[in-house]
Image 1 (tube, rainbow, N blue to C red):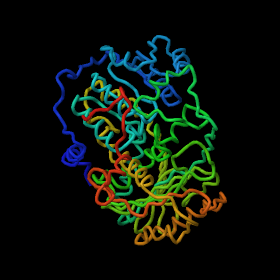
Image 2 (cartoon, rainbow, N blue to C red):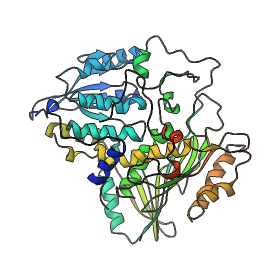
Image 3 (cartoon, rainbow, N blue to C red):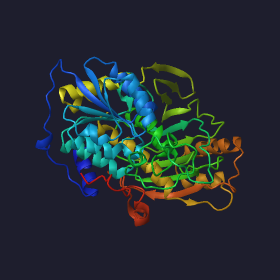
Image 4 (spheres, rainbow, N blue to C red):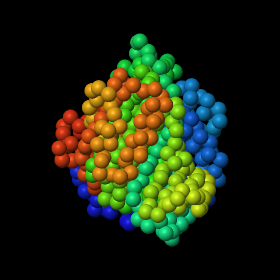
Length: 480
């Protein structure tokens, strides 16, 4: 099965009203000598950004030239670790520098795509954390910018650099498992309430809030903390679907679906933000079903306590074949025969070489070296966005929500009923009253399987707001 074709991506870009262009002469490749340091700017200095910065800082031939963070407390702390770097509150101070070769982007999700495009327009190569975009339209803009400006763009789906992935695929290709029947992808992990304030949260004085907010809308926040919990607000984050989802979904695309070059054409969803009654609006419990050209695919998030597991998998994926199944997760996996007996196990390094892979590609100016190049990762990230769209276009269920109703949403998929039973067992363990809680249900939503955009009767003006956002001036992302 082949990767997304050039024709498919060109069609996706044209659907967004853009066309791929030749590299801009103003951003011609800078040739780096073998002994020349690659100079980086780290933009976004929370836990992930600091972790990436520390790892890049310890690499031969790499120099951290700039640190950027609108939270002055975070900036000062990071600067203590890398005092030789220049420290900036405003990202434009770093992008304006001609001596910076590449940027590492680890700010809030709503900033990923605009900052990646701004950086490539400024002639920088980009390492961007997943999900690299806040919605489907943005994904294509990042891809187009990488091609238009001939920039290296690596996505932080580090498992792509784990040698174990190739070992698993070789094993499956030579097994007697037969045809792939369905795929189940899971993120089961408890998260707590983010609080519910009576009055809107006032951003701390040490945060340059206009820069922090950037392209997102200036809306009141009723959670307790500004940082990190932006994940659970659709204005700035993508929920657990866009947080852990990219890792496990990309693994399933790589190992199970083999980057087959398509996306789902139909989806259903059911779930909600249950139990907590807090200031978030992304679901903490949700199950999706997708029809694809290869096989049925499901994706489920469980963030309430007592998450349980599915055939021993908590956060990972399960590939069901005719004559056995495979379970995978970050850094490991197991193969089982039809009777559930383990017949092979795998262990890896969880992609420890991903950053070095980026540096090599930058030095060689060769995107074909990349393990997580933006075009390769775009389908799995698009599936994350499609999952969120499928949830958000749904309607609040009236009255008690029952297993029979959820079963009816995908009754032609024989593996669905067992997953429905497991989903409701999770609700029961958390004593969820489905009549009292706000559960959102989407019976059917149609998508274009080549682009991930809404299609058919689902492609309405009301629904399109979930696949392309309005940008707050002056932090606008233009068509690429």
